[in-house]
Image (cartoon, rainbow, N blue to C red; front, side, top):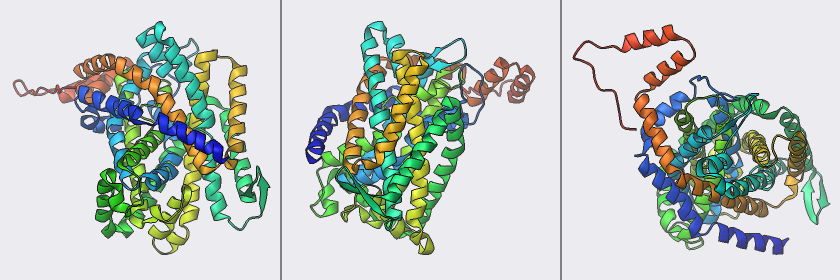
Length: 503
């Protein structure tokens, strides 16, 4: 096992070297500048679009598509991934996560836009889209080899990366920590708790039951669970921050200094700035998936006629995932100082909850985190099965047998996940994430001109959100409502203001 871990660590260092970091950040910076910082200027409008109904081809609402994407992104990366990044790269890794997310919003916007523009809609209403289709249809069939590479890697990420091993391993590790007195047994030369085996078995059954319902059931479960779990987790983290409010300025100082000089924060025991950057960006991509190419697969299923509108909704996922949820976890870990005491994985976050929460809540901290982690990881498992199946569908077509075989393999991967080591699990996930991002980022850069043209066209037609809503009302036949809206906005002669703004 040690030899295997050395091999995959070497591969991980190669994949997540300077070239990939430059490609990910460079693509985000390039798109942000070309879009004139649109993700910042249009973020309020994007959040309002999240809950607006729109008619169009697709299988789920825009909010349902976002929740499906968030179900895959808001998971163990927000709880365990942040912890492993800070342990390996020091508090400064959190700043690199923020930076990757800031520019990643433009990347996610472009992904969502292109997914809807180039998606394929079947006669029965079934939709299929994502990087494989905007590579093939946007760049031309001579680029199809790149689309196939992406689809194959997407299936691998689901089976061996974000989708299964890391999620299940994190859940069962937390359960084993809570029920540390449970009987044990040995397998593969390692000792495991019976509680871990039981938790893994129950999780496997629950996943199997939901997967049998397809995308609509996944979307319904995600719409119900994702908002609830985010609110609960953020509230718990806010209690930690408020209870330790005097320590926040020092923690922020550690994060900023540690991003460029980790040793100054950790007293000489931390790695280099490159390690902080590498781990921060890698875990940031693991968490919010900006540039990875997964979220546009869900965005393509949204009921909408406007690619730009879905792009705006899609980019809110990166903000919620990293800027909100990951920040909460990271600050809790840095404030409590548990990142450099020899713990790893979920144990770091568990200790931060135990020490950061006041009174009785601190005693219940591990149990609270375990419940949050179960919900987070469960929805991520469901979301990534959806992604993997759509990648398979692009390669094999709509063959039920192929889909069911993939589901069986996926469920088996969930079943064996508890018996993988933490280090190996996260390293394997990093490798597949990095490889999957490469063909997608190449396509985004080559299709950036399409993104700019679509964006200009949309904001010329709909300079304000009201004008876009009026157009939707007219399209769905509610002409009276649209007329009333137009009349209410008319101003006296000579007093009309130019409402147009640059995109």
